[in-house]
Image (cartoon, rainbow over all chains, first blue to last red; front, side, top):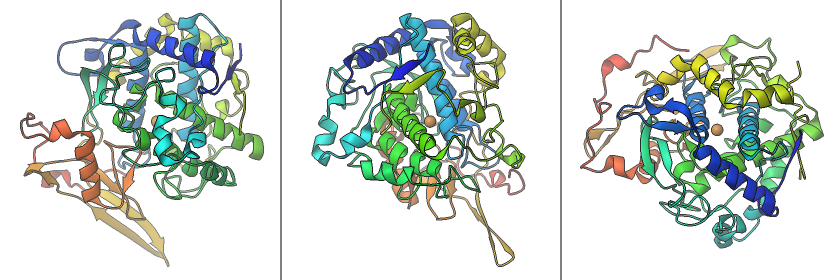
Length: 312
Length: 132
Ligand SMILES: [Cu+2]
């Protein structure tokens, strides 16, 4: 069944389903332990939710090509948008499974709408209220992911390595940068005519780089949301905070709007150098949670799975 | 080739997820390893008027006298990127280290155990031959 992805701030049912599904996946253990993922110390069960965080961390450490540390198998290159589209789609299918409802859609958080508010009002916006996803704090004390019901069990140290932990979620809203991205910045990204440009890195002025946030004034759009939320949204284990998915769902929605406007085109083609492995249109994307190969080209038209209630 | 809903929904069932994890067991066992294998230099390359420019950069950073031995990369605009905070880049390495202290403060406290990584800058890691 195809789902409809809705705005978490205006759709209470979408918000409630997301919260219940995330908590169910945090409480599901399929047998993988911390020892299986190379973490020293006593072996502890890893939840289905946390497996997605591990996948994201692994993708970030998979340098493409090896021997440089800029572009990895999910970021700072063309595959940024299709890879996160795949990650979100697989999480959405997990939510549908644990909730027994194949019409459940991931909600999105339209952060640019909050970015239009005065800066002091941004950390007080509805999403950060207890009936949203809770507020700021180390640890977060209120809402559905407060420390009394939501534990971070795997995180990243200052060297970027996974380790076991057991603590509440951390957010430092508006401390890293004072303001969220604005609607004008989203419009400017949508006007970029090229999806991405050679040499396919953080320096080019294509749409992907604008939306990821390396251009024109870092941190922009997606990156700025990570930095503005802070805490667990900083390191490579950022999917630890469920808001990761709400941010990326909005990023995916903006990409969808760009494709509706400009056509479902992707760069680079398969004829590009094999230094771009994992980023070319027919390369299987990096995954540990699914065995069938899925390529960027296969996720450009995603209508069989979901659509957005509103694009812009 | 089209992606099918039924196929992907089936791949999301617990037995299929377990099978995918088993198929990737070797990859997973290295999930907690350090990423860059001690390769510490960053290289910038550019072509200009028929010339090939390469700029190699390494850093030796200490905090409270203890080595903070992380891989930093510098892009062609001179901005510095650090794997520990992947969604940011910085105009200055001092600013980057300050931010790392903000985020990972407890790991920098004087009573935190010395990490195996605090091995100090090692000239053997500055091998310019490997990689891209
Ligand atoms: Cu990511």
